[in-house]
Length: 446
Image (cartoon, rainbow, N blue to C red):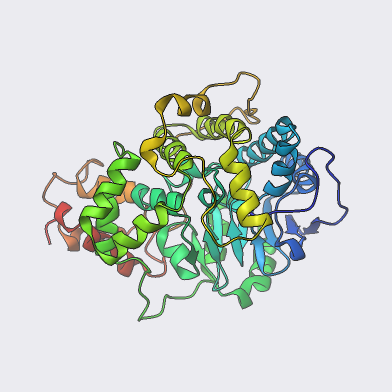
């Protein structure tokens, strides 16, 4: 997450940090703090939330398009202001900020009209929260996506503990959440973070095409998907995903529903590969408290509704605002700009007592998120990206009723998904399916 200069205790409302425009039946939202990498602050929250509520009621608004000015979509949230408030004993003001931010995330997740997010640049932390829950997430060659909260003594938030169990392989999602590793360009599409990959030079024409599409008569979501698909490009013949099948196999073994931080460390150390050693070294730089809290939130997020996951994150955020590691992490990384590991309260996960974690998960009836549309869910209602792991596994194991368990071959998987109308035109589909099968070869007959 990124910082800004506004005070959490006395927030300033800036005039043009978010721009709104009408193009036919489309509403175009432009994040406009380029010098601050469009980091999300109180002023922006105060504009986005009511405007999105207004657009829901508008009969002349059919689709929302989100974009940005500068080299970032949105590089994070206003955490330095939170630390300034915390150190003055005003941590309640910080909680107000997070409550507003997570309420906005929930609004995006349950929004009844199509939203298209153009992640053309840095998309981190708070920027992930603005985009990850929307049905159309466009990556370009400029996309750099990450959840770096662990670097500052915090934990993955903005609904990421839900999303990273759904839109990507859960084991890979946990890896991204706990390490804070970045995903670039086409890899964001291949991983499932983005639903489409469109070269940045085509975005102006894409906006024009979406805003000019007739959405009144028909499935607006499918019509928009068809429009976006016309602007995508095939993945290069020599394209290779950043993570090999062998590395993804390791993540499957290390990050699973019964993992503990200690078992993760032990499994990585026992593996001993270069990738495992690098991952372990990265995890050891994180706050032990953050690791413990984040893992529990991810585990809960795998079985929670989107509303429950965001509420759990909000309760944890309340305790983080009173915890020394968050203040130390933000001060070290974002204020002092130190490259050293922050001076965490504990040096190893084993030092963190169970009783110290209890307050992070204590419900607070006063901290609630409204169910604005009376809606929640345990999985996203739309998938316009590549096939999700849950769908692939259901077909392979016969859970969808199409096959007897243990009879599916590689060719069966490729033929089935290549002939589904939903996926047959997706860029890189066969490469993606082969990569998935290579990373889980023991689950299918090859």
